[in-house]
Image 1 (cartoon, rainbow, N blue to C red):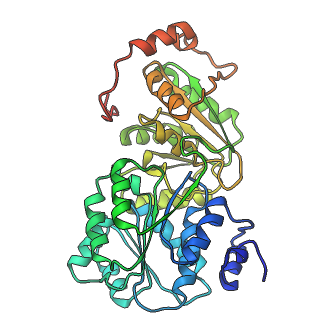
Image 2 (cartoon, rainbow, N blue to C red):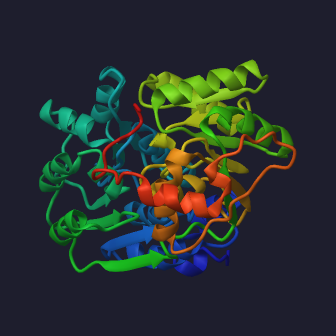
Length: 403
């Protein structure tokens, strides 16, 4: 069978599994990374969200492992959701093999995870803290690991996981293949990569600072007291398939979700205060169409594979410019088009300017026809410039979500 994926070196069974999942052409990161991983080389990969990164490492790993044996592949993920997503992808891709995939993550009991580990597996997806717990209890060993995947490493840095990651890497054999994926490479991560990898090949797809070309996005100025009314009108005026709404705080996400439910929308909620069961139910309900709207904090901004999101709405402007690119990257994925709306109030002006500087481009200001706007300096460019200049500069990366 001669397909675009078999031409990359994938065997027929894998190429067939990919074809059954409606993959037609490999994405750029898949085309570049798959041949390198198949040859056993180390990789530092950087790509925007929605580029097919999981398949770029999962497919060649499955081929390299071939048949059931020992625990030979470990994938570290920063969150439970990402670990679950990777496990699901491996199960789908490996359906025509006898390879076993297991997952361990925090927030749930140890019983099933312990029995799964002792039963034996070839591929383990894990979050760092829970994996260290299992290693400490002697439930598994990393001494036979041949392939180590460090995924979303910049997110692990943000969450304070790097010390745990280093401990885990030290428990793996030095003679191994290491795949390192991160949207950005600050000095701490360059140092980690230099220590953990051996002669890696860099695979970089697109400008990390820019949104995908398939996403149309704009800023919608509005006074704070009218934010929800404008959100409601945008939803009424938009023909959407599914909408992902980002809030800056957990309390804000709960409040917006409650108000949307009272307006007749079916809504799921995702943030770190929700139980693991609630988060899985919200994500599965959104994927299946049970919920037309998913309200989330930045826990859903990176990595989560949510196909078919037609619209992203930033109810709150993200405080870190790079999060804007990650958020709006949840739509316009896999060659589809998408729209992103960002509600901007007077107190968001500096953050909005920072986003534009970060991307090196202006974002169009848009107004919704027929909306009874309360006048604000937001609609006066000269006054807006004065607000921006006078706004106090934020101290470092402090969270302002409690203001």
